[in-house]
Length: 188
Length: 188
Image (cartoon, rainbow over the protein chains, first blue to last red):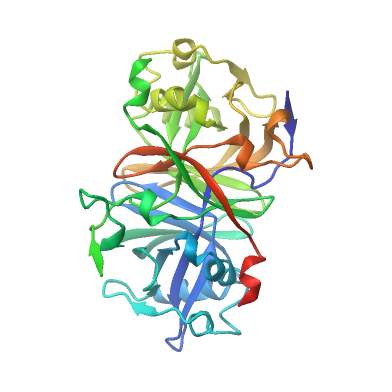
């Protein structure tokens, strides 16, 4: 028996990604989001959705670029903080002691200490309602060498990204390996 | 030191959601995706991205609706299978023995046995490149009563959704509780 929760933004899992941008004065800003996802393979694109009221919204519209820095579990405190205060009133990099690294590919900074970064060029934006939907073409994905697996491939078990649980508002880690994709279903 | 992986659809975490639709003859179809995410709070919306070549693409364009069924870990085999074969050639519900439940709100079926379901009305679609980007308004979220927590709220630790790791193509479970959102960052 299913219980109805009505129309709401409730689904699992959702990501925890930190959006990097520069403001009009060239100051770096960073903001945590859970509303986003990959949206195209060719060209490789990732979407994020922001309210117009956010400082990051104007930055991205002006600069046509953003980065996504993926925090690992140990950065949960900073990631949460990045989603709680506005870059209008505080330099969140200075406050957390984290480093705004300037992307060489797009006009935006990323968090140097976080293990994984995507550098994105804005190619579309769509108005949906409260949120504007940004589509960014992924120009590069950079990952710390020390969180790659033995084959030098990206390993979620080493990167340890956060998973966000909407509604009850909690962060979780990544769990056990469950199965190989395009493989475990072959038995059927 | 970060290693560059180039422009690709590589980020963590990504979801494992099964898209339900009806074809022109009213036959239920189901397809697993990892390219999607919440994209607006008001109205509550979720996006999915599909190639035009998929059977589901035409179904959604014709019916203007889709559902997202969230598989729990124990359904990993079916979820993987739903992403491997086309509904053009096989009835994936029959093959897996799972039940296509007709939504009372939108013109699409969902997987009755999966613990969580979103019923979505198509409100936009955008061409990006290889993928078309569908924006669906969430009309209801339904969750099995036996996977709610003691406060009758949705609990990711009980629903046990899958997390997909692109590139190395693996499914993972949800891990440990790491922190309370809008709370753990207050110390900064």
